[in-house]
Image (tube, rainbow, N blue to C red):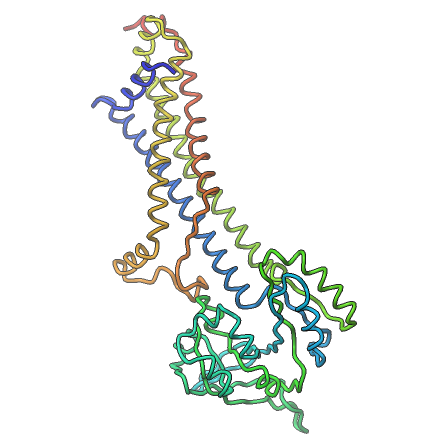
Length: 416
């Protein structure tokens, strides 16, 4: 492009007083693109962070593959544990027992899920072991005490040393029917993993205590298999199936993807829908660029005619208006990029500031599952948003620029 094209295009962007309306529309176009780009970056980052945080907590809490024996119980589980542990990429295999109970504290009963697991295996579960806010694993191991989440403790005013009553409908049979089994257990540890459901509804219990409470004897309910990486599931899964057949124990394997497929699929659908909806903001801003350029072409018709009579080609005229329109898109995209990145990097402080100003809670852990707003910007996604905004801005300049290039200088100057 020639230098005079840039000079004229940038001159047209600095509107005179009588061209104020065109300047206002161009300003709204720039603002729309900036807000659209910033919003897309922020929403995509929060959705990425939300998925990554939930994925990390789900996998860190439940393991990568769950083996469930037919009938729900297994007594000779040691040889299965030994066989599974010999497989490549398997870090450890933890015997567990899980059961639904009613947890009662001071006549306040709520549903909870009890997970029986040994102290050694719980110690290796870094998501729990690294997030103990009160008590210790020593209490869990030596005092045969249970571990509860911080949300459940806060809701019921519980501290280390207090007791919780657990009630399960699977009790003992009597001539009068089934009598629920009731157990009273001391609290030895309180954890906080940052996911509301886990922090409010899960209770850990030493494996031998869980075997007695749920009347499992020496049996266990399932095996939790932890791999070196979540992506190792496709390689390890078939090998574990072969080992189950060789051992002749029967049962089924459920990997973390199938166990949580509906939840993460819903997150992906929501993410895609949000992307499409927010893209409309940029599209609307692009239409504003079209309207502002059409009005600019109409206003600058005399200038275009004079340039044509002075020897400017149609291509040069087209370039002038494309530069003017693209400059709006480029500037808006850059402003939106800066705003989006700054917002994502300071999202917690912005949230706290807005909450203090508005006097209301903007992010509820009970509703959103996570204690804080996560934000993870992926360079590829950010680049895709920027390129999309620039492409839409460029496409928006083509038609008005083509109209300007098609102006007939003779007809335009006839009535001047």
